[in-house]
Length: 458
Image (tube, rainbow, N blue to C red; front, side):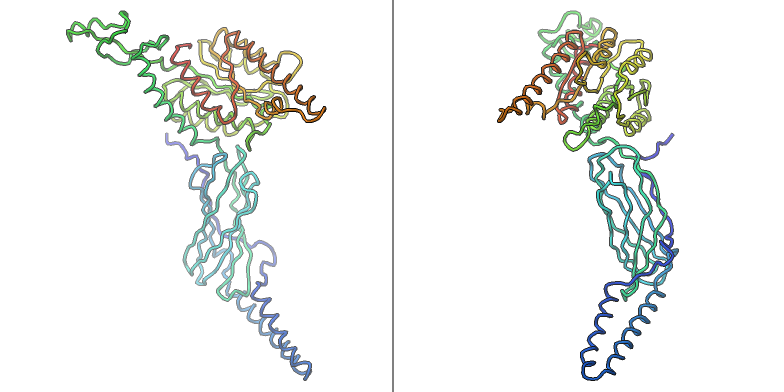
């Protein structure tokens, strides 16, 4: 079955009158009216010259009415909106607008798209010149800073003829919702990183690093330092020389990615929320794990489980994960970590790799997410990833200039020490706890995943 493209659907519709009175005067019209006041100069000498002003204004209004009649009816203009590529958070993307003129009159048009503020902070306006019975197009750019489904309203147009005296307003009902995805390019980049890492892993095998996987990969000539148990005796007898088996990390293992959508992930770091950073990292890790041959599962949650996708692989499975990650909301309340852990334990009976993307609340007791991660570690290999707090670290290291600054510095140091203690306790229970900066989150997760595969911890 052919999958639908990720890019939003193209839209087209004939224009409709924007309001009951859809005509307006242009700046050129006002200039012509203002030029008539020059007639008032001789009116100081002869008052009858003032009638020339009235005659001039009447002529200008007649020309305006004639120009308004020459304007095409809204239904003779077909408006188009096209999205050439998918929308991804933090990626500048082009949007194509086009107008098809079915009349016999040349028009100059200004197209204004009514967008959500999460796509672009101002309303874009595209100016085009459309020949009679012809088509013209233009382009503007959006820079999405929120994931999910965002509204795009009607496409407005105002247009004039070559005379430029009258202007008409119209709009086409091109209302739609467009989906903004996580950073798709970063996921592809990390897939290439996996290929390079495999080449490094081959070099490590030549040095006989311990703890490698036991899935058979190929045969090669024996080298000094190879283990006796890896010799392939049947191939050795056929070739009359010693041949060694080469192994690769196990494939087709289950990798669960848990994404926390609770209140702590609503905080903004480096121009985006923590949740957006973790969603981008989750997508990159998904693509890397699928490329490595593993089966990937996803669980997103807040006060309840939002999405639970069972382990699988393939292009359609990747598409389901991408769609699920694009719509993970950030809940204003504390997330139900215990419920998420219970859902994974109930769904995954065999040993698997669990990658939990979350944050740790600053509470007096042990946070619920720490306890929940500890429940998973006896049965599964758990990677517990939280995002570092660079502002807190800088505050803890700053030299206080006043007494109030000293209190803030001590509070920051106490917070960081408590956080380090919680993560250290997780490591003592066998959980691979990571605390990295937002910029390093994706590479750190991919490195940890490859390390788990190399050491056959699943």
